[in-house]
Length: 258
Ligand code: NAP
Image (cartoon, rainbow, N blue to C red):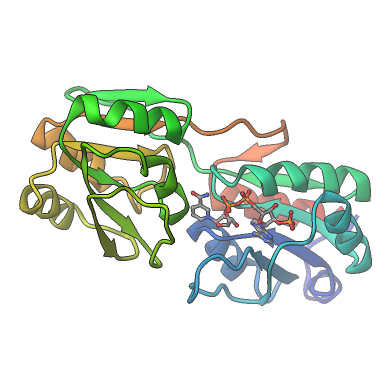
């Protein structure tokens, strides 16, 4: 067992920690670990101009769980932190399978989901398709924050006007009546309130992403008294998990030193 000292820090710095990223938490963790271990953050490559984390970065899919397991072995990875978005179902599943196969410890860093408060009118659904079936019964002008890849599910919603916010321009299919707002969080409350008012939004659609960066829209919806369609998180395989960066950092340090 290694203890913390300048000598052990030098030993530990050679250890490779893979952070599966694409979230603010992944960037925070990489920044905190930089200088302590060799941290490699992996990004899917979906966003054209991503916010890059500190440390090393690799971009693109691994080619499935077996290929990821090989990558872990080939790069002598000491531990994996799956800090991907709670809706990134495939990589979350792949990481658990690959880590088991390669015999590498894995931790999931996943922010808690949002909880409704007094005054909220939330309608929970399991999928974006279900959200698409419901939205037209709740309002006529919807603010859609499901992300670029989620818009196709609403392509058949011909009776609803949508304001869709995404980081990069979306590809068809899209709903026929739609305005695209290209923007990147965090989104402050004053801006969200103005947006709901300016566009006369009467229903909000969101995934249960959790976290503070995109939560102000929920407060704005509550204050405006409009319903919110909330898509539940998809299931991911069981894995040791923590809810914040401090706990993940602690786990990495303990795992690296064991
Ligand atoms: P996904 O459906 O779970 O992943 C699809 C495939 O993309 C995976 O099978 C994997 O390819 C590759 N991939 C995903 N994340 C990767 C990563 N961090 N590093 C390397 N390869 C990765 O994921 P998604 O929902 O498309 O999300 C893609 C990325 O965007 C994730 O990293 C996630 O953290 C981030 N993100 C997603 C959302 C969301 O709402 N889904 C929101 C914000 C950020 P292989 O099978 O070839 O390895």
